[in-house]
Structure formats: structure tokens, C-alpha cells
Image (cartoon, rainbow, N blue to C red; front, top):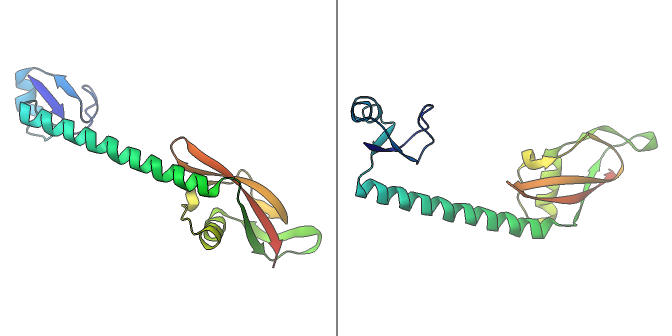
Length: 148
């Protein structure tokens, strides 16, 4: 019996794959627990349509990430913070503040968790920060920290 898995099953495979199992295992365990459905022509067609839709959504996400990458590439963002003597700041610049500055200056929304700050920014000056937009799409921006 062939089964289309609706969920990941440890011993069989991942969601969306077609696997061959014993008839009794499929009828008595997989199908009643809603882990999979029988691989008939209707269900196979539905799987094909779902895979095509998932690929289309993936392509759309990649395109939007590339568009944001083009807007951010090589840009300089200015963040103001209170600072004392010798350019030492009171506190540090976080991803949240950088994301807000990007939104204000470039009108591009970036998740604060996607901003990769290697070490806390605690001095006035220019710092390079990596922004990961999608799986393998990222860009570097310059964050210019000024005294408020």
C-alpha cells in the first residue's frame, strides 16, 4: 500500500513524501492516526498542487528578500544615543534600535532578530552590521552611531 505522509513519521519519512507500507500498518495505524492518506490519484494530484504552491510561495519570498537587499545594500543608517567622555555610550545599540532606524530612514521593515550584531555596539562611530533577509540572502549595512 502506498501512503502520502501528512506529518513527519520517524521510521518512514517526512511530510509530503509517498512511501510504501504494509497494508495492515497503513490501515490500522497511519490512516486512523491521521499521519497519512492513501496514495490514490486524487490525493496524488492534491500533493502535486500543494508542492507547486509551496514552490511559488518560496519564490515570492526570495524575490521580496532580494528587493529588500537591493534597497539596503551599502546604505548607512544613523542611530543617536547618549554618550559620555571618550565616545563611550550609556548602554548599547541593539537590533531593535537598528530595525527602527531602518524603518524610519529607508521605509523598509526588517525583523530585529535578523540583524546580526557580533558584539554589542558601545562606542560612537561607524560599525558594519549584517542583516539576514532570507535563507541565503543577506547584506551588510553601516550603522553610524552619533551622540544625542
